[in-house]
Length: 285
Image 1 (cartoon, rainbow, N blue to C red):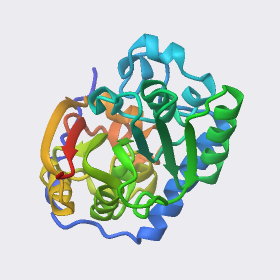
Image 2: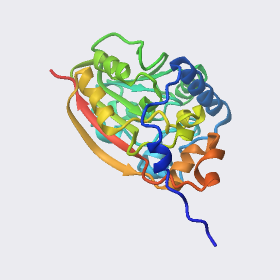
Image 3: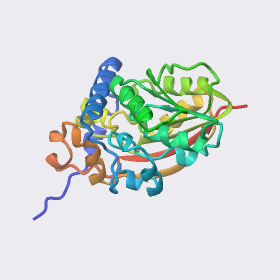
Image 4: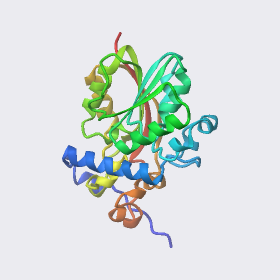
């Protein structure tokens, strides 16, 4: 007989306080995770429909148009370009660009008169994205090594700032939004896809750095996420889409984490703990 999964609520309630981790320790774990992805090509994103499959995120026509080298290392949870409303001539900045899938997609939308700039803290991803751009003849893209908390761009550079399932990885989310606000032109738009916390997660998940690198334990609530955007100065903040994850989808995210103490191995139901959000906002004119 199939065992009924236990709810994680008791474990979550037992620890209301946040489990504190050293920011640099988190950054090292995240870089290691995405260095491995860059070198081994084990993407979250794939043509199949899954919690993070390209087939469930991007229109098929867009997937076909993108370099396979970028798709091979994509790990997004949404399609921020779907709400960015990009136009020819715009300058777009992608925070946490990875292999460049959203940069290349943006580059097609802004055309030769525009530019798409990717920012990523993993050298292996930057090298890979630059090589992909060169091999596929992209002239209007650029990839810069840097932390999304300290974007290596001058103020008022971008018409649009996008990000795909990366801000949740930062231990300093308010700083990310402050710097995104800084690099946007007056009236510029922020369009992000990200993982947002719906309920408190079990301590075993919070304590696992692999879970943080897998976009789970670093997630914060909608109120905290949007609150950080407001503190940075953003206005007209709108939740464009909200997709709640079932247990199986969350376990798909945690496949590279040490999940022996939670989830299927512990008989714990992780349904409806997180959701993929699309959120837009504007810098005042």
